[in-house]
Image 1: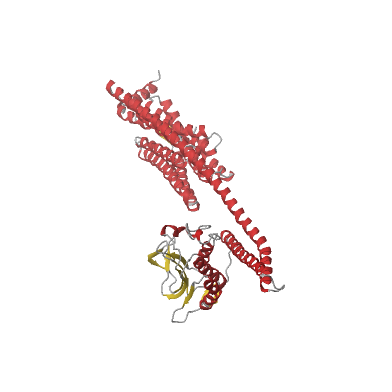
Image 2 (image 1 turned 90 degrees about the vertical axis):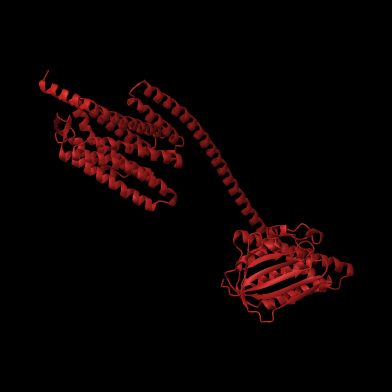
Length: 574
């Protein structure tokens, strides 16, 4: 046998024997991390065979596992030929891992392949290593004393320099995409950035320092960066369903725990250690299987909930469309009804006035009933039209400065005859100081206050109705249930408050929240008035809110009368 070869073999064998304790740590750093990365890469690829980002991740794990395999061969073999061959491939695998990580970041964040231009840049950066790997510029010789290859300075500096450039390239891409991404996607990008950059940094810095100070023991620690990277990916899979996978995070966690526990067999010194490791492995495996089943059940439940939520959203959408169709139908029908009703009302009025000649008392009574019914129907149609306008956002207002005193005076005159016929009083009480003009839609406010007075007269058996006007320096704030919030004041300052109080049937407190809703009426009102629709107060609330005002009701209970109030800011620009 050649004497030099024997010398080399004996030197390497001596080196391996002297570093037996450290080699145990080498196994621990190389084998579990390579297995873990391969398993996650395989699972992701298996679940998404047609997905480009899954293929790239699988390629990263293969390249890393090959690097770990060849580096482990360097540490554990004492044949210089095996050492030289394995060592010669580390540089090209180094840069391949960095390049694939950059490719992975682009595709994962952008959800599409990179441009041809970027691929050409990748190839040009990678090409020198492909050409020079078999040459002496990569490895110039073998150091028998230390049982290691002699690295070419230019070759080594090139792939470390390009690797450092790719590290900052990835950082720049992530920062750019983070700034442009919606808030909901930023956390995913941040987690990906931390995982990838920690892996590449640990892999780069330990490798570079090992070559720089000629102490390759440091290089072993860099491999744990892959475990960190895989952990971040597992979290992305579990939390954000990355790669469209839901169970792989739990599966990868269990497999990694089993791999880490199983790797302890490499360090076991006796039978007791082997038994303890075996028992731990069985326990971890059993608990892991239970965890996977639990996660699977959780995923299935979430999918069922998502399906139900989707169906509910579709049902709500259908109901919304039906509601819009209903509103449109009411609007069209109301418009179509208003024309004949107006004609009936008009001709009834002419007949009652004697425009077509005198009519008998019995006919006059029938015509009067027709007129009253058409008046009621006209009001109903107007309420329906207002509701459809409110719901469709087509309610229009014409704001201008007007006298609230004149408006209330006209309303009092209009209802005075009705009150006298029922033997009720109808009082209008104005403040001593002159009332200012306020910016309002006079027709809408007239409709609102008219509805208050009309309701007060309808739901009163004896007594009467009082309309009071006040100027207040502060307005109130009413909650969603129709009650005044004592500790809050309106932001508009001075207001005009109109109060319509009656001595009628009153309103139980528990019914007040329902009064201003569509088609809602009190429980006891039907015994006095059966023709109400429950739309007037709903429309009135919308009118008040359009004036930046408030509308509410107060009552001490059944039989205690009621107070309906509206506040309108004195200064209001529409």
